[in-house]
Amino acid sequence: MEITKLQNRVDDWINTIGVRYFNELTNMAILTEEVGEVARIVARRYGEQSEKEEDKTKNLGEELADVLFVTLCLANQTGIDLQQAFDAKMKLKTERDQYRHQNNAKLK
Image (spheres, rainbow, N blue to C red):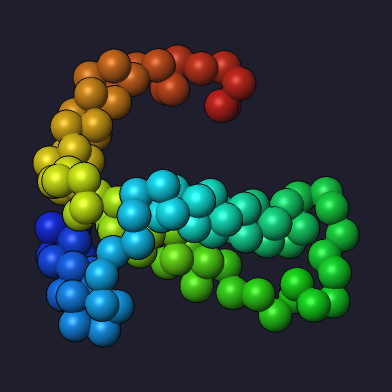
């Protein structure tokens, strides 16, 4: 699904079920909280920290979806076409990093 369709889907949900967008600062705080939840799972499940019993049932995909949802909210309420922004970022990264990673001895 294109990002534009995701943005529209979130906007429809907000306007029919969610009532309205939280303000941008609130959504930024929520995004930070959701990223923290992703970090906690990754640090404990894939990193060196031990995973607490109550964390073993946490769903990484669900937490990543929360991050995506709030990101889409922020894009919608600030007038960002995230598809255009993502495409431009991929073009930039491709041009800038075309050989950078392939020539990085640390990655071989």
